[in-house]
Image (cartoon, rainbow, N blue to C red; front, side):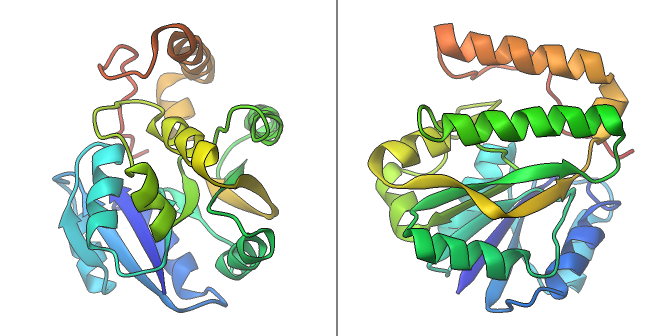
Length: 232
């Protein structure tokens, strides 16, 4: 079984789209766990109506860790609520993971509702991830696979990290196992944060925070005001 773990916070607009794309998957042996950070909209009601297992979450690292704690699958798939998957996404991903004997894997991303500038940014980021997978693993947090065995081996997500916990996770996973960016699939994710805060502002935050991590370590305080409640 595959355990799909979704951290949420006020995702009533996007969660139904993700759940709909999961319902139409060609691979169907999975459970869905929604780790909710005290949403004030109808997110929890949507998850319950769809038959998801609902647990209390927090920031993304906390939500993913809480979801993994109760997961029954041999493979975990951490995906964000504002993503949409092609109907063969899970089948192709799992087949590539099996062929490559991977312990952990990330995915390229595309803009679900963006423009040409977003397409350029995502293409650059995808290229960066593919290059760094051989040097210092990076992954888009909206789509990460990991076997339960390897997840337990590396101690899961660091719940003290406020930003880029996914990079810390896959970096540790790659050090103790085999990690790759999948070549057969791409996940579509929303650019709502770019729209809400401004594309240039978000890009600068990401660049500066990446340099911060390089010189000072993981980000455990809200230094960059990278908030998670963007419902537009």
